[in-house]
Image (cartoon, rainbow, N blue to C red; front, side, top):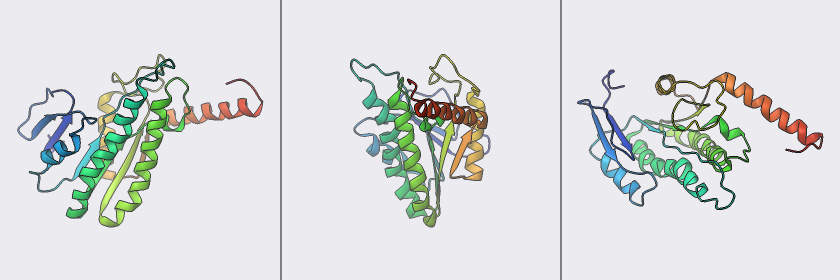
Length: 212
């Protein structure tokens, strides 16, 4: 996007190694108490915001003895996205245009006993984004829900990672969505088919009275 002439502002928990005259970076955690105020301050100098991509996310395996990480998973994956939308979308409404993109996951279709907070938080994010979209569209604002499978980042913790795509390929997919502005983009499709077969198998086991 920088190569195309965009002005880009990044926000993350850690500093960025990216250096470019049209790029500025701010260090802030999406679960911090002052995140909304900080984000509003960061965006205030901009005349208008064309696109916001919310791609913060974490996933942890369940620790049944403490459930210690489950709350934070929801705070990052869902509440952080809602807080970002709360700051960004009203500004887009005032401007009469904009595009809000959230990175959900194909795990939103699963009931996962190994990481229930991840799949549940992504399911909630999917429902929120796809409910928000028709409310925003009459105001000239588009909302896109991107549902990736496994992407080659530190988030991919499963010992089995079918059809995993590179971070670069995922980034190009996001860039495509900025142009196309779909309500939902599921990628890769082969992963979606695999999950459909998996869910069908789970239902068949329940119908037959077999153990989970």
